[in-house]
Image 1: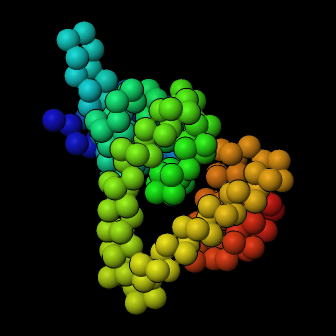
Image 2: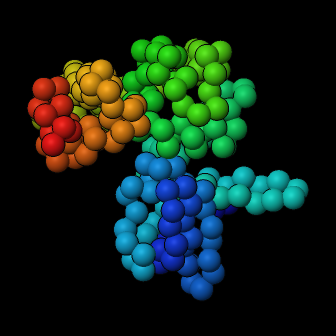
Image 3: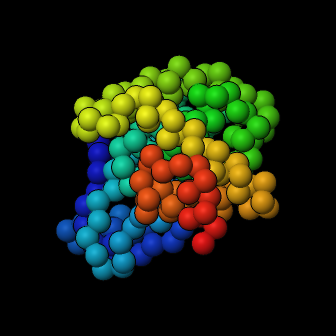
Length: 206
């Protein structure tokens, strides 16, 4: 089983990457959110891998971190009607935090904006994954709290709400969902996850 690949990044597009690992080129399908985190061509990179083996094909899916890979696996293994292509589309359309927040809140309308997801499928994703996502979010909050005295589970939940509110505000201003999400994620990276909604919006608009 291939768990991760590490080597030189030979090629990259928004949905694919080629890694040279000891002279062998491995082609991987990746979500846009992972492509955004790739280093420059020729640099060393590590991607966490989910491999799908079939009689007539072998396909590798790569992710920037374990959490994205775990969510991809959750989608494809727990929700009927969600295959690798649709799961990759979801992770390309929205960041992991936005997807988790939407599922936890039962926001099927937001999920339905992802390519290949209809209303009924979006509702099924919310129903079938809500408990799994709630446990994941709780574990993440507890882990963050253990690492820093200021990042309590309550603070983590508030930060998630602020990010979601900032994305919603940009959408009301006419931004497309994926563009708004990307702009807010960039603002969070610059200012920190506990930044106020208003500050995130201002930074995203710059």
